[in-house]
Length: 68
Image (spheres, rainbow, N blue to C red):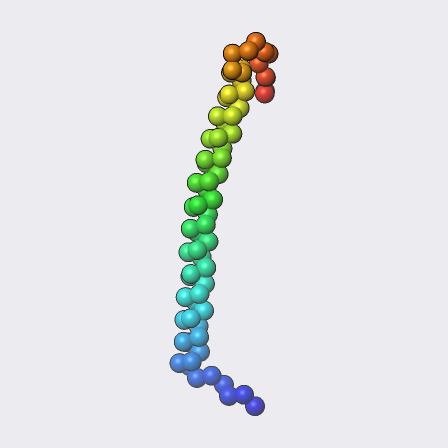
């Protein structure tokens, strides 16, 4: 029959598990910050692209695109 862990062993294992969970949460939070910054940049680039389509082309006579 396996031996029951002592209270100290149980607390030690519990502390390691909490530390591992904390590391996962902090890593996840850093990823969210990074993804949010990337999404803002992508949104700005998309808006710039849409704005350029509304302005027309490089000097040639052409109908403007209505994206609404």
